[in-house]
Image (tube, rainbow, N blue to C red; front, side, top):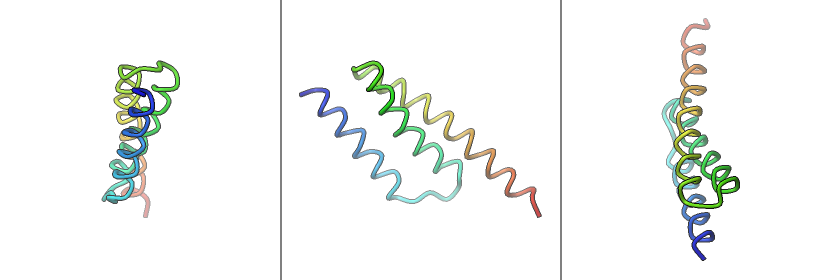
Length: 77
């Protein structure tokens, strides 16, 4: 029951983040990274702590990747 609830919350958060629209690639990367990281964390850890750790790591990596893409876009003519 708890695993189904956690998975449902993660999916709902991902849909809400993607549906809200993001102004930059950094924000989009953070949203996608959070959802993906949470799903991977849940699959590996199988508990809430794994889900939250995965979401945190995914958010950071997604933001860094998206932010670098934004920087390249601003520099390119």
